[in-house]
Length: 602
Ligand code: AHR
Image 1 (cartoon, rainbow, N blue to C red):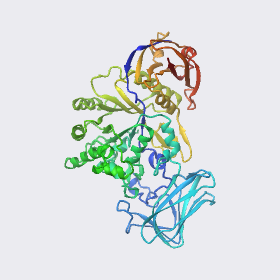
Image 2 (cartoon, helix red, strand yellow; image 1 turned 30 degrees about the horizontal axis):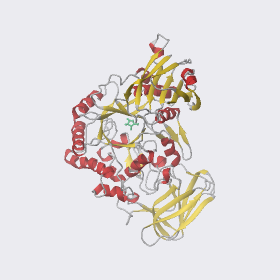
Image 3 (cartoon, rainbow, N blue to C red; image 1 turned 90 degrees about the vertical axis):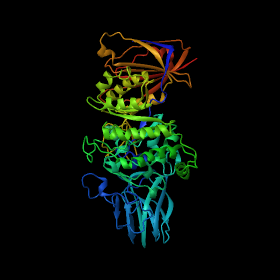
Image 4 (cartoon, rainbow, N blue to C red; image 1 turned 180 degrees about the vertical axis):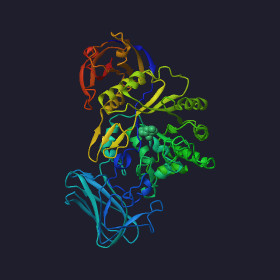
C-alpha cells in the first residue's frame, strides 16, 4: 500500500473525539466505580427496586445477624430505615465480599445512637483483620474510625456488635486510597483504567438510566447532591438499587480530575419508550402542567455547575466543597427517545428554554437510535429546525457493518448539527470486533470536522452482575479487566489530533472488499506538532505499506505501537517500541493489526 501524506492539506478536526459513556448499568456505580464497600449501607433497598419479586431484596439485603429495621425518628426523612441491634452483632458482605489489601487503611463511618459499637473486618474464615470501636451518644451522631487490614483477602465482611441497644444507619467503609484521594471518592483502580484512556469527555448518568422507565423513574439530579444521608435513592432501570452516593457533584468532580468535559444527559421530559413499565412504543411524558418545573430543573443544573456562589444552586456546589464553577459547556437533552409528538413537545420546550437562558451552553439533542426503520430522520428534522449545535447518535452493529460503513459521515451536511456518537459497539469483545472499531474510527477521524465526540458503550461491567454485553472494562471486587476493545479506545484517546492531514492511499488490490479492510488516518497534534498515523489491517494477510510524508519537516524517530493477534481471541495487547521514522514507514503490518505511529517532526 502506498500512502502519501500531505502536511499542507490539513483540515481542522475535533480534538476531543474520544471519551467515555458512563452509565450506571452492570453495577457500574454502586459496587463499581463508587468507592463505597458496604452494600445497602442505608438499609433502603426495597422490593420495588427489582422487577419480578425477589423477597431477599429488602431493607436487610446484604446484612446478616440479629437486628430489626425501624423507621422511628430517622436521621433524615429521605432515609427512613435504620437498623437496631440489641446485644447483638450484624455483618455486611459488601458486593460479593469485601476485597481488602494488607496494610491498607479503610475509613469507617456510621450514624449511630445508643451504646458502644465494636467494628471488625473479618475474613470468611472468621479471622479478625482489623478492629476499632466507636462510642455513640443518646442521639444520632456521625462517628468515624480507621481500620487497617492485616491481610489481603477478597471476601471479607464488616461486623458491628454492641453489648447494649444501638441504632445504626449509613454504615460506610471506603478505602483511604480513592482516585485523587477524594472523600466519598471513586475506586482507584477502576478510575485509573478510565483515566488511562485519556478521555476528553465523560457522559453520564446514562443511557437509559437518564430517562428511566416511567415518569417517576426519570433521573433527577437534585436527588443526588448534598449530604449523603439526605440523597434520595432510586430504583435503577437496570433492575437494582441506586444509592446516589455517586451523584452529580461526584460526576463533575471526576470530570475535573480527569481534565475531561462533563456531558450530563437529561431526560427530554419523557421516559424510555422501550421500558416494560411504559410498554414498547407507548407515548407518555411528564404532564404538561409539570413541565415548567422540569425545565427549571434543567436550568438549575447549569446554575449548579456554573453559577457564582451567590446564586442558590451555585451556593450548594460551594457547600459541597467546590466554590469555583465547574465550567460546564455541554448538556444533552434526551436519550435515544422515540420521536413522538409527546416527546417533541417537551423536547422543544426544554431546548428553547436552555437556548434562551444559556446561549453559551452547547445543547446535544437526540435523534433516537440509528437502525433500519428507526425515527432517526425525524429526529434530525427537529434538530435542523431547532438549529441544534449537536445531536447524539447511537448504534450497536456487527463488525461487518462497521467495516462496510466507515464512510458513514463522509456525506454529512457540514452546515447542520455536529454529531456526538454517544453509543456504539460492534457486539463483541474479540479482537476482530476491536479491529472493526479501530477501522471505523479512522473514518471518524477523517470526519472529525462533523463528528465532535464518540464514546464506546457501555463502559463498565461487574462480573456476576453484567446485564449488557459487550462492555469495555469488566471487573470484580479486586481486579480490573480491560477488554481488547479498551486498548483501541486507549490508543485513540492517547493519540488525538487537531488537524486531519490529507492522505492518498493506493492499494495494489483491485478488489474493494479487500481494500476496505485497510484503514489509514493521519492527524497532527497542535501542542506537540507530532504527526500521528493510524493504520488498520483487518485482512488475514500482512500488508507492506510505503509511507511518504510531504510538506511536514523532517522526521527522525517514531514511537511505533502495534496491537495485533488472533481475531477470534481477546488477548491482543499493545506493544510500543522506538524505531526510526524510515523503518516505521515501511514496516510490514501483520495480519489483523492496528498500528499507531507517532513522530516528532522538526
Ligand atoms: O448502553 C446500554 C444502553 O443502550 C443504553 O442505556 C441505551 O441508551 C441504549 O439502548
